[in-house]
Length: 257
Image 1 (cartoon, rainbow, N blue to C red):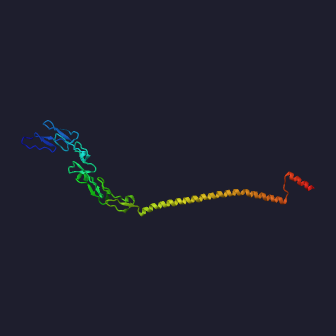
Image 2 (cartoon, one colour):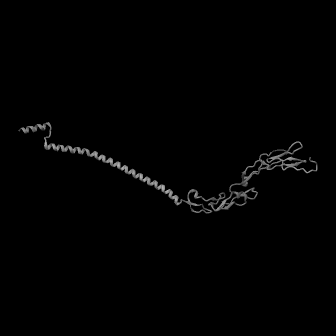
C-alpha cells in the first residue's frame, strides 16, 4: 500500500498525477482528462490534419506539415493520425538546406553525368553524379539519370563499338547470325526459281502438243483430195468417164456418122 513520502513507480505507458499512475493516450490520440480514484484516463482521436506519434499525456495533437507549392515542395507521403506529412522537392529541384523547407532549381547535369533522385532530397547541391562504367548520359538534363548500355547479347548480337559515359554501345550481327539469316533466304529463293523453271517446262510442252494437233488436223483434208485426184487419173486412162446427158448424146451421133 502506497503511503505519503514513498516513491511512486509508474510503467512506461503511464504518468504520475496526484500521487496516482494514470495511463497515457496511445498514438493517434490526445488526453481529455486525467485519471481519478474511480476512473481511468480519458482520451480521444486526433482531429483531421493533426497527428500524435507516441504514447502521450498531451491534450493537443500536432498539425501536419504543409508542402508549400511556392516553396517548390510536393507531398511524398500524406499524413495521418499517427504520422506527419512527408514533403519532397518538385521534379527538377533540390533542398536548399538540411531541413528541406524550401527547394532550389537543379543545374542541368552535363554530358556524362546523371541525375540522382536520392541526392535531390538529402543534399543541398545539384544532384549530379558521373556515369559509372556500363552507363551513359548523352544529354544535358535536370532530371535524366545515367542509362545502362544496351546489352547486345540479349538481342543475339555482338559489340561493334564499346560504349562510353556519353554514348551507348553499338551492336551488329555476328557472322553466325548472318549465315543463319542468309542460308534460309537463299534456300527459299532457289526453291522458287526451280519451281518457276518446272512450271515453264511443263507449260511449254503442253503448248507444243496442242500446236502439233492443229497441224495434223489441217493436213488431213489435203490427203483426201490427193487420193481423189489419183482415182480420177486412173479412170481417165483405162475406162470411159461418165458425162452429162447432152454431151453423151452428141458423141453417139458423131460415132454413127
